[in-house]
Amino acid sequence: MGPSAEPTAEAIVNSAVMPGLWEEFLFRGILFCLVLQALPARRRIAGISATWAMLITSLLFALGHGLVVDPVDGLTVQLGYVLSTLVAGIFFVWVRERTGSLLPAIVLHNLINLAGLLVVGLQG
Image 1 (cartoon, one colour):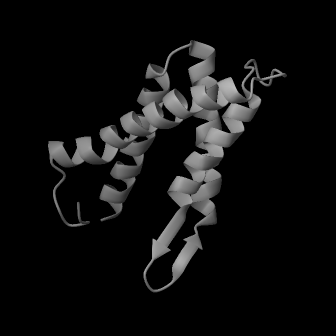
Image 2: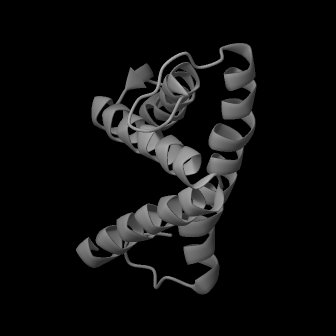
């Protein structure tokens, strides 16, 4: 969706809803459970006992958002995206573990994506 384009329902769903759904399913659903099985937690932090799984999956989530492969510039790191999505990833794990459900993390992720979409739309 370009800056001058009117947002359609399809564009909103594709930009604000689907990424949060699939990313939460992948990172806080599948990968988190696999890492937690491989590296069981030994400590509790902020009410959850998933430290290594939380850190590893949140870092992978952050790198997935902050590493950019460009044919001209090669691999670059957008540190702001890495740091902000690392914090968000840790928060999403915390929400998932505290609630015992992936659904609240999906909803929060989608709200953040929607807010970002609205900010970009208001600037355009």
